[in-house]
Image (tube, rainbow, N blue to C red; front, top):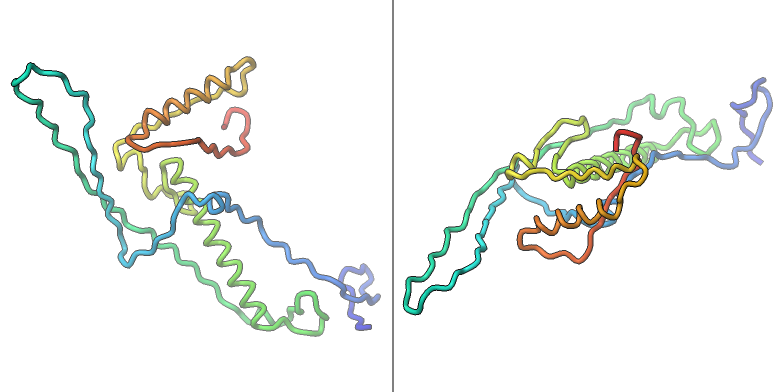
Length: 213
């Protein structure tokens, strides 16, 4: 049996065997990644261009036989350029990360291997990037793209000349017709599909506070 000093003992003199170690990682929220709403596509440039082609759909009137035909309306066409955000993140392995640090789950007289320290740092860096992407995608669904510092990068309502539609469910009031509020949301979505089709609506709801959400 390998015995090591028990650092949790108040007297500091008793010995105990290290049987297990716990590595507590922060929560990683990836609901949008699981749903697959956003598709990853790499680009070689620092900006992307989105071309918008807006057709005009109108009802055609009848005219007398041999009369002049109606003339089509010219479709709208525009282009917008968006600079891609650059979000680098670096970390280093310092002597203090290894010197005097016992191996996780091992004897206190054994140093933590360099490769294990590097793997833990790389894993944490990867999780930070994944969480940042999830945060930016969630804000993109709300129409405003923000970085991890809360800085607004793009407001899609302003960029595309859209008016944000907001429906207050008034959940804090007794007797609120929640089903009516849901139908109001569905009608707003259907009226603004602009040529697209839908089969269902997926709602993402967060836990809110009274008077906040």
